[in-house]
Image (cartoon, rainbow, N blue to C red; front, side, top):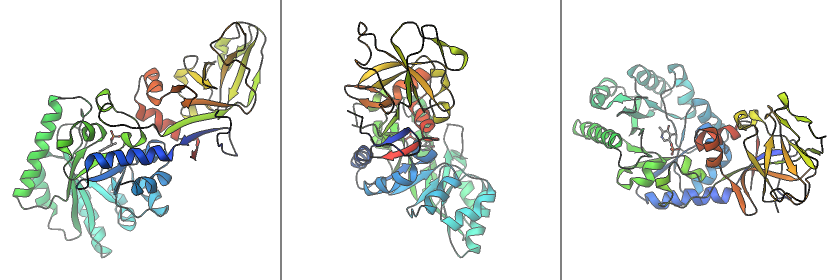
Length: 387
Ligand SMILES: *Cc1c(COP(=O)(O)O)cnc(C)c1O
């Protein structure tokens, strides 16, 4: 069924990106926020491992008007790929980056006067205006100008003709918890900061605060724009979002068997030989996916892979660039594929195969982390195939 999956020429393991699912997820969010609210697609960390250069044009066509990255380098790579849409760096980068920002027309988040003025100075010297978004600290204690100091901050920098405030934003620490008091307090602080800026006569630009969970759970807080990351990739940040928006996973991770053997009973598998072949008719198959590809070593001997819609146990310690799994071809044991595997067979590490599926959330739970991290990890080195 997955035997004819497209696969890179150079290595038998890959991340498969379902571009139709991506398009549908972006449309679902655009429908949710409506025409009057901008949708900013968060494409930091190479679009959460999905490949930003390829995802951005698809997202734009499906309704995302702006894009957010975490680093200046990520923004520059998008510009060099020919992407001309507005790009925001979600934190204030080092002051040494201002030339690069101005040259590539990438907006920084701003929360120190020193950075803002250096950026404005640089923009002015190039005959440009440096557009920025003001980061407001409302309670997450990560970045931003304290919410009750925003007017004083703007008074400090607004004399500069090289600066233009294109947006004012904050970020929630607990948006994935429904009816959370800390969320309400952050929201209240943000509202007060925005009102104070307006009363003092400052232009705030686009006002925005919502990430994926806030966008889905709290439509009353959409304001001028929503910054959506995880949801666009088809993942739910918490249980509360699942009944409210229909999303489809975009990323699958697959490999092909490079070799399959029948070791002797008692033979060890992998570094440290943490698995020993217990019976006859156990096949040990190798796939070229390891911890440097995002398959965390702590999953060794604990995870499963799918072959022809059937679960097989991963065995032995996961290596840097490969791992092994066992196929029990003893006909008396029915939990494994009815037939042995051979070189070239497709194995699913994340995704659907037949009637069964292993999700990024399943793997995140096994690892004691969140799907965000698992997706980013698989994006690190594996080649991506867009289907
Ligand atoms: C990562 C990030 C987002 C997107 O969060 P999701 O939960 O993936 O939607 C939005 N805003 C800021 C400031 C972020 O750092």
